[in-house]
Image (cartoon, rainbow over all chains, first blue to last red; front, side, top):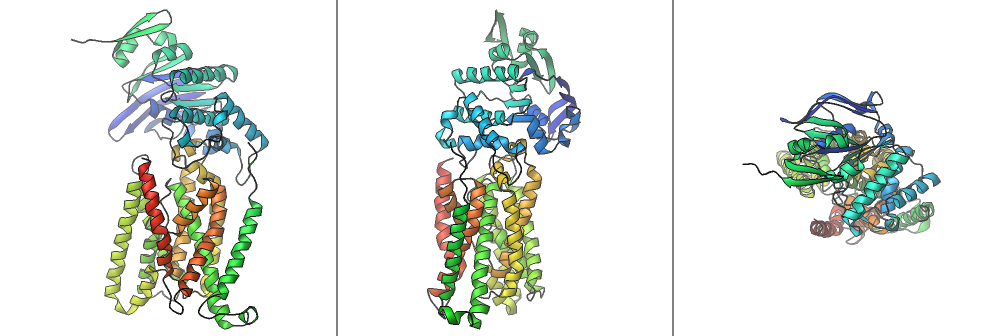
Length: 254
Length: 321
């Protein structure tokens, strides 16, 4: 279980997050939403132990994430960052194999099990046919799916994804969301997903964290949180709910 | 997809090639030997043999350091020379000479190490402002520091005419004065240093994906970087302290290896040991045989190969942004 306790983070004078108190239950599929600059990425980086908060702490199973070794943490959560990029050209297979690093000993070669897990992860993200491809031979969306495969290969109970859908075409967006829902249900992974599309969040994520002006505007079941009022506060758009669909239109302020 | 093939037979094969090259090169030169008299000749045993061994050690060390810097800075254009670390170390060596330490390689090495460490800290600080290290910032920092250090060295030389020859030696690399005591000090530093880098090869691969990604894949990024920067700077400092500044070895060798066997440091580093040694051995042999009995500075030969390659890489790199 992840608990954010009185968590505050700022860069210089700019306060990004202030005094957050959040509990993330095991097995939840969380949508992390908010306007641009509302601190979604910062929140994920804090949870992943990549940033040191000015105040408060992120507790993972009762221990501050900053007190875990990198290796222990990498066995518990995987992080898919925005805009993966590298100048050096490892193939997709080698990239996903790096997801096994937290389980390998130094100077030891990959085991048979590692190879099977990598194959499985590539197949799950529908990138097995790309296994020999280098980053410059793949489209942005293909690279994104390979990075997700690497996170799956880490076999962690927690998965953090920072806008993993932004490079993908609509078909692959649904494919990844279906995959995430499946592993959320079958393997009971806790998933924190930064996502912009309200309808997709509505359809796929059972829980919602709504960030607004450095604080949490709402935490709880998605369907109760995506109210026209909350949506207007955070995104400044007018929302109308029709069945399972959120229709959006700009607010014309006088 | 088959399993990763063991490279061991290749390592052995190329090590034998390197040994053969060492023997072959030691027979060439201003004084030529045949097989039997060679092992009795003091020129061979006390001048040429340490020179051969030292050039291989330094070549291996500089190449491995180059490969390590390229992963740490995520930039194929870096090596100890380009980053200004070699020049920093040579300034340290020059200061050591002025302090009257020229008889002690350990003293010169220690001063070179201090100056080299200061340089790497400055380069690292400047280059890591912001999230991603920009090629331009990194290279400009290295170039500027090199200018600064050569200015300081010229300044020191003007102030101390009497020791000028000694100092010039450090700014233009040469193996001409290699001795067994040099080898005895450099060899352990290089061997231990290379072992440490080999130990961290997988971490180097992961660092290529960026610090944060490496950390979330289980690498203790800060510790690994600190250890590796310390160890590589140590190797560079002792190389510079014995044979002066030799540029571009760490750029050329890992680059050529990467072209053939890909970006995996677990292959690059072992090959860099072998081919780095071979490369500098051949350069040094050329430098002392082409115009024998006169000598070319070996640093100018490596620069002749390295600088054009560097420009080529810069050109290609620029196009991809």
